[in-house]
Length: 42
Image (cartoon, rainbow, N blue to C red; front, top):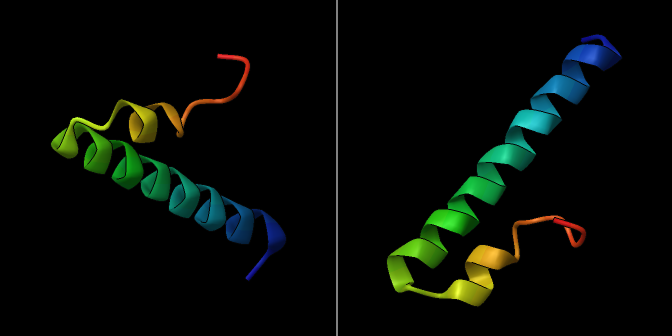
């Protein structure tokens, strides 16, 4: 497997993890958890 494909798979994994964290925060009404997925400068 080439390095570019491996990086793409890792990027997709990271995005799915962030989305899961955000959705969990939405379900629980936890604004701190929802905010935790954003970059510090955003």
